Image (tube, rainbow, N blue to C red; front, side):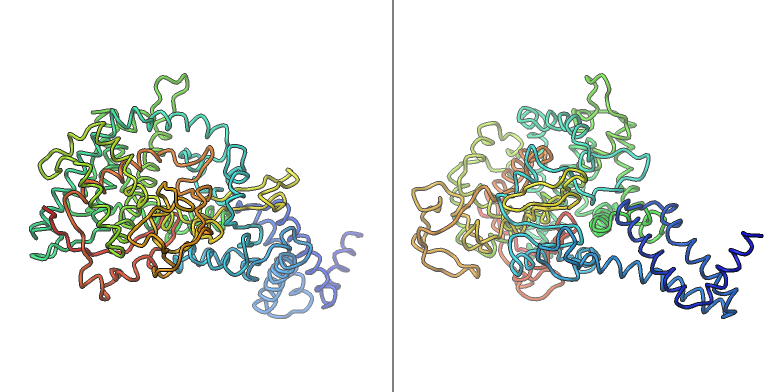
Length: 605
């Protein structure tokens, strides 16, 4: 009887608009607080929080008011969700938010959807964050609970040996039950164990004994293809013109290397004149989707349920599975990365699924990054002929055997050591890595909840905050590098001149951001502590030494044999191939995506 009376009273109350409004306010506020504190992202708890209350209230209001269901239900559900959204926005913009004192655009303070669009929609995330730093300063709020900094003194606390753990952008990237690759491991202890295997595989002795000959053999193959391009007989070259897309050929080379390294071969993109399996297209689609979802980590869970978002993942998995299955079936023909990652000497060797995840990750991490660096270097040399001429002279003076004679594979430790000591070569590579770091937006870190917060440089960062040292902005911060947007390899040369800037044909001048001359003075800034193209700390790039060896070998061999010139097509609009706009066409999907770069290939002698 009492329960029936209570139900009747509650039902009567639902006919009162003030009572309904009060219930909606109270329930929406409570739901918002639960989401804020516990951050549920699984379908079941989210459904329990968002559906039962507005459903019951809709039924009660319908029974009392007799208004049409199609009027009551959308009104109640819409009001409930709008109020939750309003509480969220009000709090994120309020002075009580932990990050209220940090500057940034209002839209970024409210939602990460801005950054997700800048990734998936426009691809200019790296340039956008740089403009935010230029507008707001050294530390910017780029999300409701996320900061970006471009200060070098923040790097040790964020990325160093005692730095912060990986941020929430790494949540849910790996489907439940699937093994994590080295990059996606968030537990520092687990990462430390797995990293030892990688460090052993990519050690200097193994580069000399295993990977060096493999790289030089592929370099020799690349030289052969480009030599045929120079005379117009290569497939993919414009007949009789010696014109080729150097970006595509750097990609073919890098994928062949990583196929050899990870699975003992199988890609053969140089031999085919391009990707015939769809691997690169699938990889770019997968990277683009993952990079956008990283801004909204809970969305990973739901993306797996949608056919149009799972298509990229499934396509990439299918193309990557073929060489993986072949490698597992045939076994090791040589000591490839798969062999090292097996870590058979360990009392608890990793599972085959874990080795496979790491092998695929190696292809992802080592192919596009290397291709981007090489293509960017050729781009800068095309834009700066004086730098190219100086590099040609240095390579000629090094007296490398001519790769066109099949001697590249015979380059030994002497040639490798000589490459590492070539000042102008390494200056050009460093300057390319400074201006176009392959991982332009860095890697997110998190101040752990319950830690009480931490000091990062001159700032106190509250607990639960995500923070990124934005590599692209750091490398172009005028507080760390004078003329930060200019290609100026001289800044990397050791010399008695201020800030390690060596004499050049214009020894008393420097390039401004537009490449024109301006007077150099003692205030020229060159802060090498602000240079982190391979990240730093325990999660830095495991393949740094290998990547530098690979880039040096390609550059020395190609400069020894060829001269790349800008074509008329690269000066006029042709898709993404316009020389003047190539750098601006780079798109940031965690790894930079390159446009075409058409060049005319000429044999030097």
